[in-house]
Length: 223
Image (cartoon, rainbow, N blue to C red; front, side, top):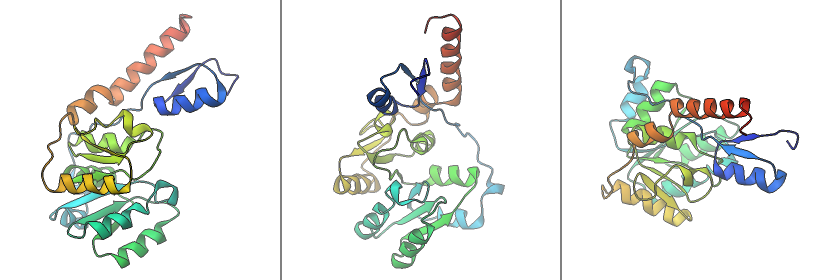
């Protein structure tokens, strides 16, 4: 890494780690996401269509223990009157399936396609971002692009995406995390800075423009 003249980091959080360990130059270009305007319902399974008929919390990630998926059990115990829809694939699917057996309000839908994913984002009451220290958090951007509020931990990349108490909440511990989910479910929260905010700050178009600007400056010897 020390051999590179310039490193591009996907968040200030990632850049701080680069600076700490390698003490080399870096620029931050945050990842962009697709702002999905239209969902093709022909690509959405009947099972997913039935799920959205009832209020639910949505979570999608790699199904791995290091993604803090154990938090789902705490949410299921504390908030019994709403379904928790979990999507994704990974090495710890058996663990999620065991939770599904143990708690009636956890529903694991497995790997889903893009239309199903955005359909679930769009209709969810709240998006639950589980990781404790993610470098950025693309799924938080995707959820916000559908005007769905997000609850995440006050650490890592989500701090650079979520505007606390405007388009979601940043929790300092598990107890606070669940409190914020309950607050949203009680219809006490109206999301501000959702889709338009993502379009301006975190779109693929913006990311591409930032990269082109960096390339130009490198070629001109300005970096």
